[in-house]
Image (cartoon, rainbow, N blue to C red; front, top):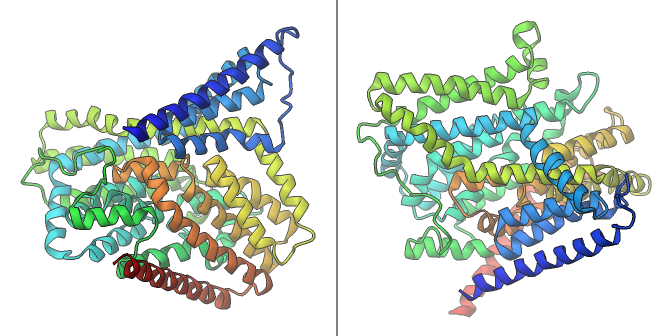
Length: 543
């Protein structure tokens, strides 16, 4: 109760401060009658203030919806120079409404709704329960359940949204029976989403990165940059070490201890969903889960190459490079929904009425994630309108000349900060990759390292940010409280980021993946061993 009151008081205090500042500035401008046509905060550090406010409030108050909305309003205030009318118009018309009306965003929302319906159908048909029974017989340890989650996450490399929701729905029953906390499950899902997609040549992320490179060399550059993507590779190494060794530290240790010793997988946080569907069909089989997933992967790949004009004569590589992930995932999921619909009818595990009941249930299950996504997109629109991209571009170009060998590490850190503040990896790619290629030619080995640093930093910031859509999807997939997921994951992500930064410093002087990648892996393992020894000493002192 005391913590809830403190959070409420903190939220109200911040809101009152904003109202006071807003009112003062609005009345101060009353004499002029209108706001300036150009924001005084354009292309300055203040352009990063809205996401900073939203992130800080989310971590302090644990209320992500309110925090994101206040961040949006702050962006409107800065853009309109604290004009009342300008703030409302920009925050709602140019922010929330424009984000929802964007064709790409609508496609993603439709994909999420359809995926929610498919997952609900799989659960009601008994597919998830059947897989849980199968896993209970074959997976006997907590380490095995974690390794199975990692393996499934690596196999579903086509798209991070698809990865998060599918892995979550499939592995929740398994992780619950193995007494793995929802916070740990959310971390495993998140760490096998973007970090895996960014090193998979056949993925929506590869297509996005390739689109920022001219002359059709995007996919070639993407493949050359994979061995230098230290954050993604070291995150996977770190996950494997944590799963096998049983090591946990930071806030995650408390959640895992409660799950292991008390069977409390939620550790007091709000329970977002039932851990199992009591109405699941007992006739369900594992194939009722596997088949829709396989069909979804195949249909999404076909949908993506279709959006890239593969069936109009383009090669597979060109079609995938030019694909529209929103269109491809939407069409692929729609076809999968129809196939799954008739499959369950033919199998007689669901009746027509039961299937139709899954439609509103699946939609409702996605409402929290959709709401956060819409607010996150709107917040990004606020930072874009304030010139955050241009400000970061000036900072990067200003530091490029004097620190050439340290540039990979500098770009990595800047990409981390930008992606964390804006909550988008793809937007960070679009800002930094063209800048990097303007400094280094494609034939320069250091240029490849810097491009990889852009991608790694973007994924790292995306991994840490509470307003990242991938982080939001991981929380939804694990049915874990979003702020809890962010706070428990952050120490792990920062550990991998620190080792990656050191690896990029080494790569700046020695741009050879055959040397730097093994060094990075050794540094990661050494860091984990040191953390384990430190935790062991703490445990001995406590006893």
